Image 1 (cartoon, rainbow, N blue to C red):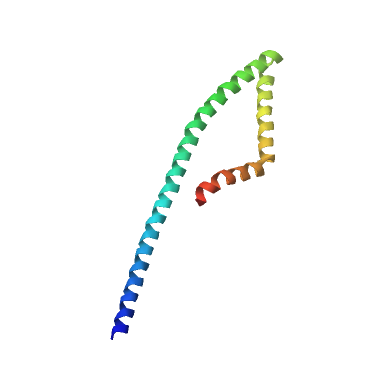
Image 2: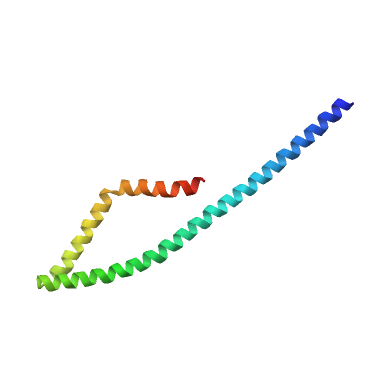
Length: 115
């Protein structure tokens, strides 16, 4: 009977070890998800805060630049049209280099997500 009792005890120990492993793995993944979620929300909050301020600054700079171009060209419509064309040119450049932006974002976010 001693052999059967040893096998029974070994099985109980293995079962307990397996249950502890599953519980600790579950807790680890919950913490990892919490970490990724808080990092993502923090990043989004920063992007919104900084982005909105940069957007407001860009609007003021755009109006000031268009007014200065209007003064130099002595035509308000032409100054504002030129400023609009500058933005269209910048947008086309960003569109052409979008693959580089994608790879840059993946390189920056990847290590944080998979660690």
